[in-house]
Image (cartoon, helix red, strand yellow):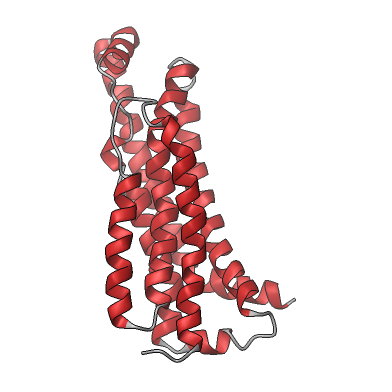
Length: 223
């Protein structure tokens, strides 16, 4: 019961921003789909295939920062109210244990982002699979996947920075965060970074642990 109450609190706090992000992603994907449709009508789909494949065009490259921004916005929306309105101290006193509380809060944010990215990118690439070879679509997906993972990375980093009570440590965390984010914002020909994905997944697992360090400082009353 307490788990559901905490998750419901997170939903109430973030629901409008989540819906806004869905709208932004839908508009961005729709714009790119319209451009592809217009180009196909003007030059023909066979020629469009040739341009995309021979010139190693990466679709969705124009909006590669959207997942990054979505992660930051989700983290700010979820955790800034906890710190500025002194809610987090009360949240930690719930009869759940700090690990469970942190897991539920971060899990909620990750699930929301996962749903956003799955619906947006999955729907877009599924639509392309009816016009382009599945191998090409799969290569495009593997190319934009690091950028999608970057959304989860920036979310976890944002939570780590906001929950940290020591301002000097926040600056240090932000510098580390910028360096880590640069690993995800890579650019290359379709499919060129597929072998780097296990490393990026490992970084995400590590980042999921970092907010617990901030909570430890918070409970110790560090300023």
